[in-house]
Length: 176
Image (cartoon, rainbow, N blue to C red):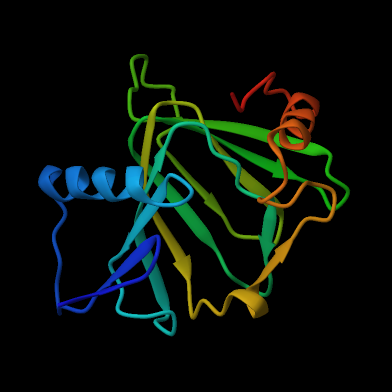
């Protein structure tokens, strides 16, 4: 049995394996989701000490820059597609742009990233499909461990406002 939420589902089995058939199911759920994103949580609930997910994005997406409070860490391993991870200081200045891609032609491209300090960050999907494996420290009690940046628009802002913001951080006319 799998426990379902709007854009996520939790695994409740003692073990789980990931294959292309599951990825295709996640893509279908992603297209039907309200925001064009879906996650399959490999852990059982938000209280688990290791939060591990397969996250799927369809098309261009805006994720409100945020930081994790306390001693949380997180890492991403790209499975399919391409994504930019943007790191900010507390005032919204871009400190770094890290491009992750599942295609590593020269061997120098990044396919994994880890953040071990409470820095503001966001992701910017750069492909039609962006699918990645995320691991973060739990438990995940959103209102206690996530602080959203006041220097960036909220996720429900209109596309004009979000595009203005994206233009300022180097992604011209990102949202269509």
